[in-house]
Length: 304
Image 1: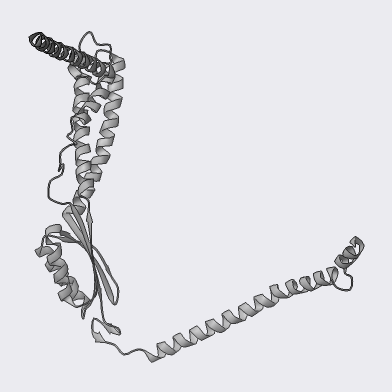
Image 2: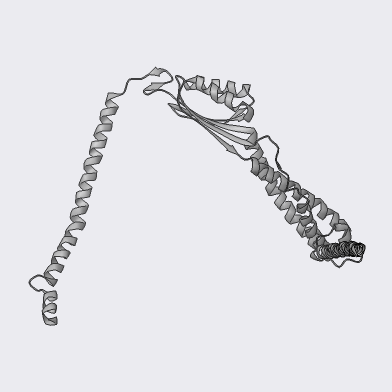
């Protein structure tokens, strides 16, 4: 009896394994059919003679297929090098504007940069410097040696994610453009040709815009911007110290005094011209409602 029980147990195990295998086989066939019905299939199969899809539909599926092939499960999709945009502002007090300009030109040229903008007044000079990012720290430290530093600010912006995201999108668009050009060669009628050419035009426009964004971003990463504001000391010019002009000071004082008196007179005049009628109107209104005439008082008495 024990032997018969063991045989029955073994037979049940074999039948159970066989049923499980059949179940997995059925699920695999259904999954493949579901993927085929959803349109996520390879381009060669869609291009076969028996397919009912147009070439433009193949292009749209190809675009989705390109995105599906990207590996989003990678633990570190970006390289280790960071993409940083550095900018700096330096305010310095100098003894000579012309010598400062020459010194900045020399330093910038030595480190492979250039001056993109210059604005000079009698007592100030503003310089906008574009310098290779690897030389940013060296240049901004040397600028402080030109004079006395009044203010220095350094800003760093991390655009690593933005840069590599834009780079990935560019690669995807270029691959899509190649596929569309291949589909255009295999198009069989004018309707398909027109649709594919329209799609190619749209993708090309998007590619140009994205490439422009990438160029600007790459330039900001490669070249850092340093703004230098060099200022002479108070009462100084290129020739040296200049005593304050007493006559000019008295003229300014007199001009400010006259302007204050004139503004005060105009304010009083406005009050008289516009304030008096308003006050008279309010007095008349009070007399009409609550004064001797007392229309409001009479109405209250009648109401009582």
